[in-house]
Image (cartoon, rainbow, N blue to C red; front, top):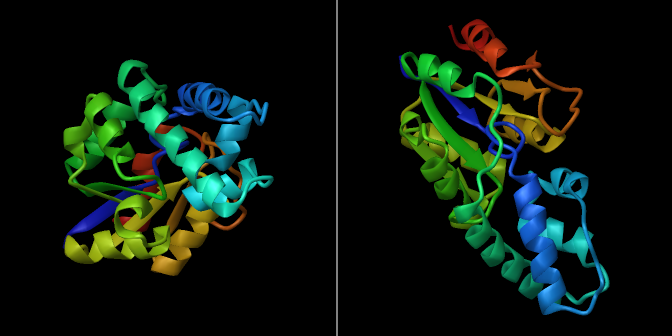
Length: 211
């Protein structure tokens, strides 16, 4: 049987929030007269949401078209910034993923824009451990549908989803797969099948849920 572990990205596999918000603040100042400045905590609270949802939260004073134009400029600035600035990973992440890769199919499923997962995979140093990835920016589907899509196209007989937010848990439920809450991340969902406080706990949690 082919079993897999699918991962959320932000707050689960890396923390790029400091670099992303630095790039966004610079872009907002350059391309608007809104006088807005956002914090790393703000960015962490946005992660996991779609770009449309984030734009609605950050720029409610703008029209829909203006919001999306500005956030797309922010995304472009973010991609350039992340190319030259390292992000933070979690303790023992690589070692645990290498061990899991020996037994399970690994993939990344995120609500991010197209190109963001690719950036993570190219920068992290262990991108080869992941055999597939998908995102809302590429398919136009929500995270639950993308989880199902990745599982189906790779012929997985069973899989679990690892994420840190309420939305991750909801996506796993929609896809009909068990959810592991990465409590070291940014969110605090109440509904999960297992909860881990560090990456090192993932091996045992996966074994209990997948065998």
